Length: 151
Image (cartoon, rainbow, N blue to C red):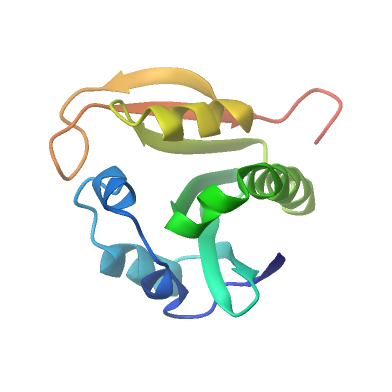
């Protein structure tokens, strides 16, 4: 597995399962791509051989704050532990490099896998957001705060 900087269009080349499509909750990938092109961001793509397995990163609305996102292809299920370790390490290293004090993400309430993934990364529940998503579903606002000793 290799982590490379996100290239325009990478997210459209992921082999997504029907479950992953449901996880996106109706959010058009075009909207994510537009945000990456028009806002300060830090994003990567996970490659295994010549296949894209996942894309993730941070949108950076202002100094010290990041909005995390992740789109996972179906192939990740063949090597979930290396994927989790790779994302965990990237999040910590990137938080330190960008001197972030807070990372937040929105996770669909019905998506148990995404909720466990965010918890593994260290995110904590901060607020429940009824009727929040583009699909009208309930989401959780989760946050990861810089520890006192730094990342």
